[in-house]
Image 1 (cartoon, each protein chain N blue to C red):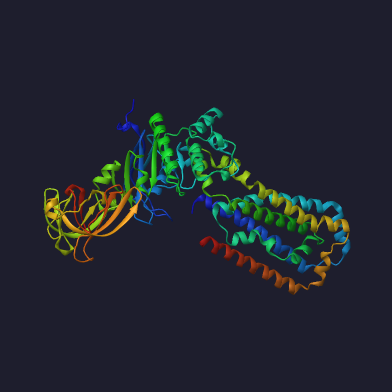
Image 2: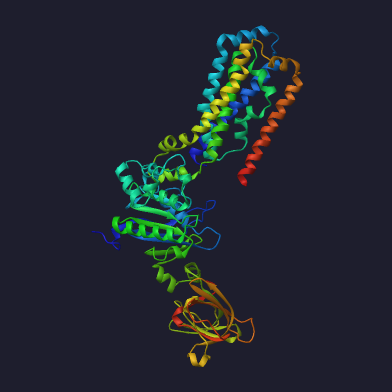
Length: 224
Length: 368
């Protein structure tokens, strides 16, 4: 394995691990200490954290999302790493929304950042799937360095995907934070309170299973 | 002034190169070749569906593959550790791999340091000026191929690596591109290394051809040398249609071998190696080198063989006829004969076939 590929895999693995932790940690914290009051949530939303969450979601879609999409495309590594990075898109919404409306500011931000990363990765990767891998070789044969090829070729080709990722991340984030903050009462709290912890655990396990199946399907696609 | 035969005119050289196996690429085994200034060198891959090694040789020059032994030299400098973008070469791969978001003019200006005037001149030369503002997706395959050429030639590289396009271009388009490239080679001294598995694409285009099979270079020469004097059956087959007659060597004198075919028929063929009586061999014979006459064998002269016409197939500018050398049954050795379509049709099924001994080539069977 070349050094460049190893570095790429380490970066992807790191992002995938962060994505997993972004789901697993809030789940564990919520199970350990569930919120019981609406006051904290309303205060949190109205204090201006919702726009921060939205900004973080968009930023995650742009920077780490684009990097992850580029690495997945370049390394042709669409197995479990892709599954981990896209985890928030695979997990049912009913599992995710309560996390974003809990009494912890950190959990709110982590969840939104993870969702932005997933949208950025998915949209960026989709825009790159139509690009022939040979374009980088063609550019190199013209005397264009890899950095210049990234700037002049890949980023413009990814631009529609990046924009789509931004829009989806912003919409999802606003829908689960700003809108509810304006309403004053997060609807999703009801969902959380009515679902007992064992169900959450089972659902979390199912989410990981979906992730593994998704990774296996992608790996099989690669083999044709 | 450098001439093509001057050693200093070598633009690209592989010297005793070996490579390791990679998916989809044949490893090279002790390949040495030189592409000279102002020369079009075709690497003709053979061996059917298996990779021949021609693409590997191009990848070595481009910097997309590494030699495990030997030297890769471009412009007199060893290039083993030089990244692709610092090699100053042009390359057009099997698929044009154009950039979908750039128009034709932007492709011509893509290489660093190319001015608008240079790009315009190149577009004009490649008859692309009318398409300057068009995006690749809106262009037919022939124009896409020309755009890829413009992008590759914009920085005036001394070497162009050219793979035969996957999409079969119309014959007129292919011919006009070859004529344009030949003119460019004559004017600028550009060297072209062309990889293909179609011998016909080298005729009238290449100065020299190297037949490569299973990663080994089998023979190098002008297209006519390889067509007329192949060193092996593999080379003979790679260069064009050939009849194969299996037999046993009766005797070999000077460079002519007498070979007994099935049914006891004796034929003669030229051989470059010393064959011994009793050895199994194959006679290779081009279809158009066989003379056909509706006469008796003794009327046609020494070496003429009676034959029976089995089938005639019209193929445009020529007609293919299938003969059996056994006039009584249909199980004797068969020969395909090619004649101009304008030739008089055969009125009789029983005819005579004959050929010059130096047009038939005898190869030892294990070599074949």
